[in-house]
Amino acid sequence: MPDGIKLITGNSNRELAKKVSEYLKIPLTEATVSTFSDGEIMIQIKENVRGSDAFVIQSTCTPVNDNIMELLLIIDALKRASARRITAVIPYYGYARQDRKAQPRVPISAKLVANLITIAGANRVLSIDLHAGQIQGFFDIPVDHLYAAPVILDYLRKNDLLNNIIVVSPDAGGVERARAFAKKINAPLAIIDKRRDAPNVSKIMHVIGDVKDKDALIIDDMIDTAGTVVQAAEALKDKGARRVFAACTHAVLSGGAIEKLNNSFLEKLIVTDTIPIGDKKERCPIIEVLTVAHLLGEAIKRIHEETSISSLFV
Image (tube, rainbow, N blue to C red; front, side, top):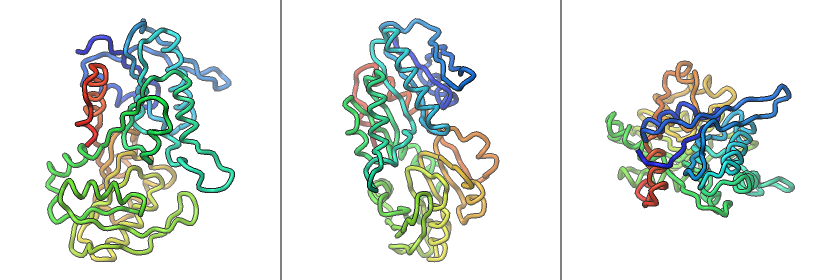
């Protein structure tokens, strides 16, 4: 057990934090997260953290704003309690899709959240599959950006799902991610030509690549309303794909996503626990949840020991 590490979590990732705790054989630091009657969040760290290497495990998922505020307040509490170093472990980074000015007079929210985390007192950030790689540059502190691809790939190998496979990017923006995954398994690549008319509304146009009689694996960083992945699966089936699977790191699954998935051509949706799934797995039998606890745990251990974590980036 590494000495000097403190693991703290808010309300968003308690199950994942427990698994990280078990991996590292370090108990979670006792902390209370409560609210006043008007909704203000109250944080109290119940243990001495002076001089410690503190890691705050908190995804900024739904309810996004509450979880961001919890993260900021925990960081501030640790700073004022004289923690030696504070690392914000953010498995899912909310507001990441707002990473540029896509329209006039809109904020770059991902940058604002980065500023808030830094000003609160974080010395380092650890995250998984950021929606846009440039978000690392939004921080003026070190950012360790991990990828869940090895976890997903290990599952596919163990379940013999790599035979006759073609990797599919659900849109042009995800080509780099899908190409990297396809390269790891020496598989061909296909691309869905998608046109988006409004936020969270997409329309599939056509498939670039030969998917006929192949098992198609759609790779994405997140699935939100599931409109894109469901339409992609339909387009792939129309082009003769034998079976269609999907894999993503962040299962946001908001709105009517579960209903869409249940009525889709997808045989399996592989996700990780960067975002708590809750009862969604029971409501949608095709969902398979993999844990990233060992990935985060190993990264935390290496950050604490000041050793290289570059081997975890792939």
